[in-house]
Length: 173
Image: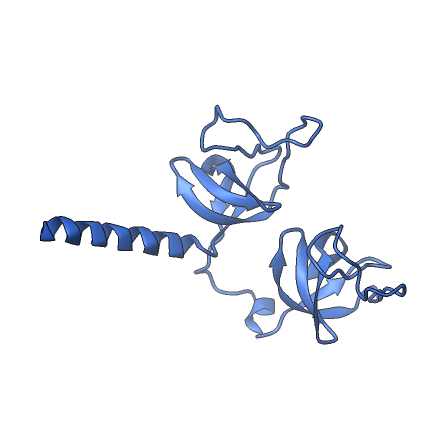
């Protein structure tokens, strides 16, 4: 009985450490027109828009990986847990040397569009900052402190406020 208990505790710890290792892992999409699946099988339904058209992440897009099942990575795509075949994604390496831009302790977002809105949450439906009738538009080329990624948005520190800016209208430096 003691031996069985010991085996179960060891197995539980191994599973916990395995899950913890993947907690903040990312995979990058390596193919085009890649289908996201609702279960880890090529026979599974695909993630679709309301009109039935398949959803495809962009080649090069990074997705948060929450685990592995057989030949699939379990990932978060726009807030939904789905699966992507290992054929079309690869883990983002955390062991390679950082680029010169990444070696400094602070990174920045550069605004690439005009009249770009800062939002209170990482969504196009998020409230525009500030919430009064006069939104603030950072200037094209302005550098804003980068705080992290949030799906299709960057989390930034703008004048002491934690806000979000669309990746479509900005780039990470």
